Amino acid sequence: MSAQPQLAEHVIDQLADWGEVRARRMFGGVGLFHEARMFGLIFSGQLYFRVDRAAAEADSERAFGYQRGQRWVRLPYLRIDAEALEHPEALARLADAAWLAAGTKQRTRKGVSA
Image (cartoon, rainbow, N blue to C red; front, side, top):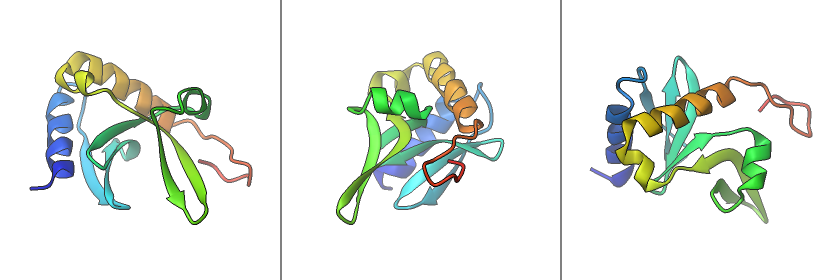
């Protein structure tokens, strides 16, 4: 089993008391969903949780990004420290904030909701 499904299973186990979390493979990674809302993703063995754009811009060191053609694209997700993965209560607080952030419609420059 590769690292991404193992990490997804671990996160789901750690968040069992927080609520039902489903993992779905997408874009070469794994999306994490709660109540049909994507609040997290796992990519290259790292866990990222959704944040608002201001938080992502303020912490560019931990922001999720990828190369698209000649430019670097950042998404409003921040890498979660490995230590939080071992503390279900802390991870649940972060997941709750991520889930709430995922529910807020944000406008992009092109006028499309993010």
